[in-house]
Image 1 (cartoon, one colour):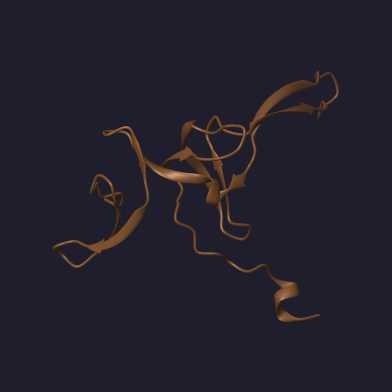
Image 2: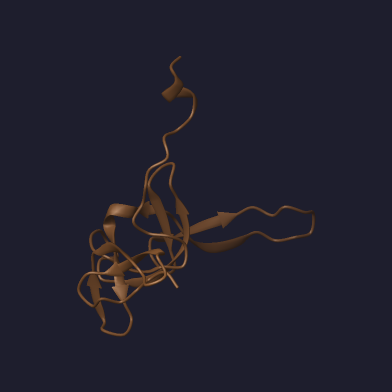
Length: 116
């Protein structure tokens, strides 16, 4: 067994938790939502209101009834693109430095800074 078999690789992703993104491919193409969770091990993200599936949950305790829950499932990070709420446009990102020397993410189309 090699080192790669023991532990999954961690991928650098262009999206983080809390970012606003637009889905650019798949059944939910065009939907805009917030990233609820980023999973770097598989390069996936969970977006609010996207890839919602119905899960039938069995009762956990005696006397409790089962229920049907709608849960957001992960999608691949390559299927989402950053979205500007102000300009209503999707954009790629670039990295730049602020006046005080911090490296921040910036939307290419609008020039909007993502990291505050």
